[in-house]
Length: 102
Image (cartoon, rainbow, N blue to C red; front, side, top):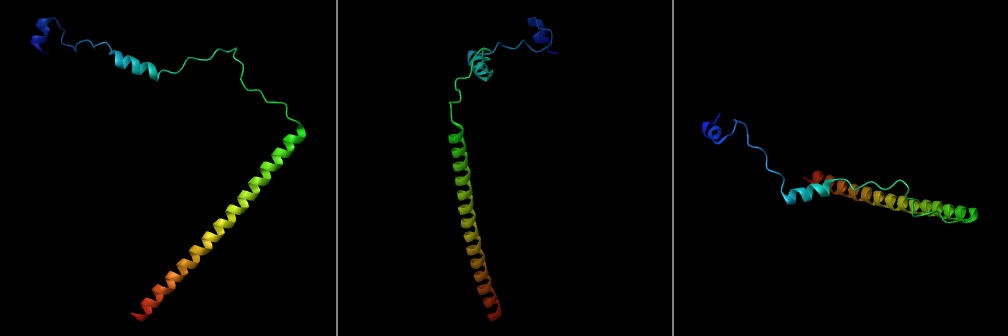
C-alpha cells in the first residue's frame, strides 16, 4: 500500500490500463480472420466438358510419364550408389595398404 497513491485518490490497486493505441488497434485488426463468404456464392470454376476418351488418354499419358520418370530416377540412384561403393572400397584398400606398410 502506497500512501502517496492513496492521497491522490487511488485505492491501492494498479491504475486502469490505457486504451490500446491506434497502431495496436490496426495490428489487431490485421490478425482477425477475414469475413465469411456469403453462402449463396457459387464456385467460379466449373469442369469443362471433356470426353471420356480424352480423359482416359490423359490419365494413361500421366501414368506412363510417371513410370518413365521413376524408372530413370531409380537407374540414376543405382549408378550413384555403385559409384559410392566403388569409391569407398578404393579408399579402404588404400588405407589398409598404408596400415600394412606401417
